[in-house]
Structure formats: structure tokens, C-alpha cells
Length: 300
Ligand code: GLU
Image (cartoon, rainbow, N blue to C red):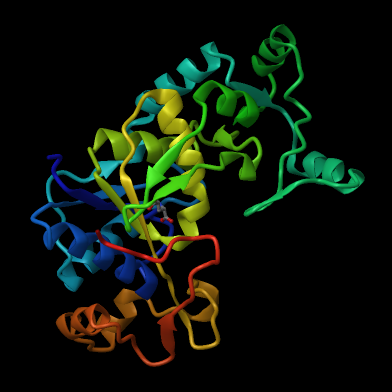
């Protein structure tokens, strides 16, 4: 039997808020209740937004909450060579292509098209650079800023039908095409979230990815990448998110309480965690409904 391992994988772009604490708690308890391992990964690949002081803030907050992780912390910024190797492999197989479009060009192209397909994150990339012949694309890529996009139709055809198992033990059919040609390496960063997270979950031998339902749609892409890169597929459990009483997701802009603020206000971390375990949240906050197409959380 494989060992149970979960992870909490925050991006150090700010202090942790109540929603992060809830997510860390879900992953932590899933592992510890099963004598498994709870690991920590810092997703610091966004050069514009990741900050060292937020890393120390996150560690401080987790320690204060009593959500201890096991072993070395993995920093994505130290693993860029690994992601580059995977991207190289996909390039050699013709499954990714360089895209030179600016945001404004993409927006114009979409506005001009009568029926641009939409995915969960907005309109699909219209595919402008998909058809550039490889020799031309290579020559341009040598001196023009570009990102790398997955040719999702081609990748899908190469991988065949795919499923993964959810927390209820049910098979979920992967529909990565709902996103269009996603970015795997950005103009300003050598890797995107999708590629890095997929590789790291495999490298860290994560058996169960326990994360927010906001990432439910992303799992469809991750499953495809696993097939392309010959990586194992964990079980995926997507938990409901904490929101405001009026149903808004937590974010800095709607005043989501930072864990550091709760601490400064004299909150008792043990009480906070125990209350959340019992499904009770600080005043004004509650669990939000799951989107219709996401499975209800299960733990079988
Ligand atoms: N780094 C992501 C975030 O902070 C979470 C990644 C994941 O759990 O897959 O939203």
C-alpha cells in the first residue's frame, strides 16, 4: 500500500488568511488521521509577487496554528531545472508551441471573433500562434518574448481518455480542453503553476492532493500533464472554501482576516482550529457551496 502524503502549497504573495488556514487544516488532518505525512511546499515561482518575508510569515502562521509539517520544505524556485527538463521533453514531442501574443493582441482577437470558446478562467486563447511553422517559431523565439502553450488538442490525442479518482473513490473524467491551450512557461517565469504543481506532487510522492475547490478545474489540466510526463496520479479531494456570509470568496480586498491579525488580536490558535474542525468559523464567515460540476467532498 502506498503511504499517505498530503501537502499544503501556498504561494508567498501575502500573509495567510482564514481560508488558507482552513485549507492547510484539511490537508494536515487528512494525513495525520491516517498516519500519513503532511508536507509543505512553497510555490514561489512568480518573480513579480513572491516575497521572502511572506515565506517567513507563512511558516510563523502555520507554527502558531499548530499545523506542523514534516521534513524539508520544498521551494519551487529551487527546482526550475526540473521543470525546464519536462518542458524540453514536451517541446521535442511537438506538444507545446511558443506564443508571441501580447495580452492586448489576444483580447483584440477574441473581441473580433463571433464565438470565442470560454473556459472556467475566461475566453480560450484563440490559437493565433499555434500554426506558426516550427522553423519560423524557433527563429522568432530566439529574440522575441514568448510563453509556451500546451497544444491541448494534440496532447489530448496523444494521451487518450483519462480519469482520476476523487475523494469518494469515484472516477472523474479529465476534460482539459475546457481551458484551451494553457500556458506552461510564462514570458516572465520559466514555468507556470500547472506544470510546476504537477511535477512536484509526483516528486514529493503526494498520494492525496487535498486543496480548495477553486482548483477543481485545474485538476483537469494536471491529469493531462501527468499522462504526458508519465507521472503517477494522486487522489484529488477538493474541499469547500470559506467565504463571507454573503457568499463572497475570501480575499484581501473583502477584508479576509489574516492569521497574523487574529494572533495580534489575542485569538487562541487551539480554539480556532478546534472550532474549524467542528465546522464553526469566526463570525461572518461560512463554508461556500461547491460548484455544480465538482464532486461533494469525500474521504474514502
Ligand atoms: N499555490 C497555490 C495557491 O496558493 C495552491 C496550489 C495547489 O494546492 O495546487 O493557490
